[in-house]
Image (cartoon, one colour):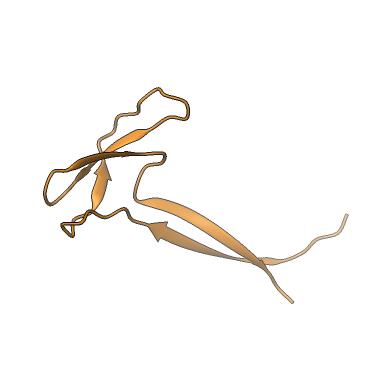
Amino acid sequence: MKERKLVSKTYTIFAYCECGGDFLPTGMMLTSYPPQYPHVCNKCGKQETAYRTYPAMITETEETK
């Protein structure tokens, strides 16, 4: 078995409102397919749904030389 070493970077993705606030999850999930997650703006109270909860974390991987 061979091994390889990778460098991974983690990013946090925020969803933001046009008023400048951030969308935060309400803790609920809609049982649609695919599931949707209601969010509310922490500044103006606007509500939107998304296919993931925000803030979200993703990881991107690069192969080292």
